[in-house]
Length: 119
Image (cartoon, rainbow, N blue to C red; front, side, top):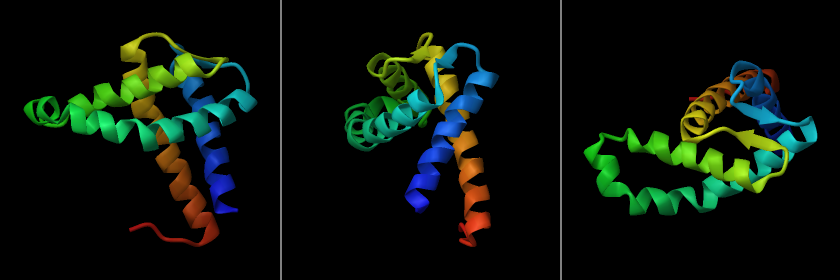
């Protein structure tokens, strides 16, 4: 049950993100559900490999290159899922940053509603 609620919260985060950032667009809530799934899979499978491969650059930039990696993941999902549009790398970086913040806030609210505390 919790997994479904988190999935719905992530999709809602995407829809809310499109209101804040006009350079990221999602056509429907169904598309947002698919984007949440694909983004989760891409972040779980591809992101760790990219982090390892770009470790020297990440260390050299004191971790700021991770923003570029997150933006690339967001942009990749924008190219993979029909109905989800990201206009460039900068929009992907800003979109990934805002998406993380919004989904984190919604998950904190969910945790409080469901009675689970985050530490």
